[in-house]
Image 1 (cartoon, rainbow, N blue to C red):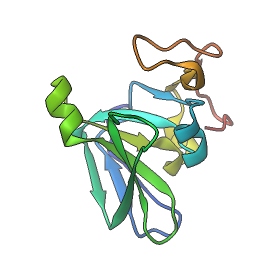
Image 2 (tube, rainbow, N blue to C red):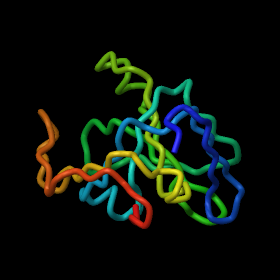
Image 3 (spheres, one colour):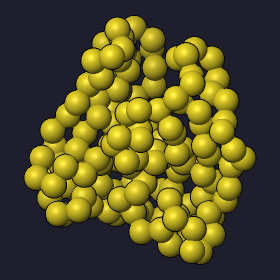
Length: 145
């Protein structure tokens, strides 16, 4: 599949549509409580490469003293769609404006050829690089995300 072709997906009910300008370089299947409980596999993009249409609700972690992201989900069906960096976090860290998109919204065949990584977010202290729970894979036809 094309890494440069525009891809479109939606939440379960179709009220929120997500368009990405290209496939991500890789996706992360993290095992932290937020990722597991939101049912997400994340692809990362510059803000200019993502368009979200439709009304979402958001959630900001309360278990972190300085949360970095605001998680968005469809207000109708509850499907997790994406996250955005919190303005305070961007200003404090001088972080680039990034968006994480829930790649489980997209058809699996669209993701063939994309690397899937497995960070151990459950045991990550929040500083430094992730360790990984298993080796990354390149998705092929028939792989589930």
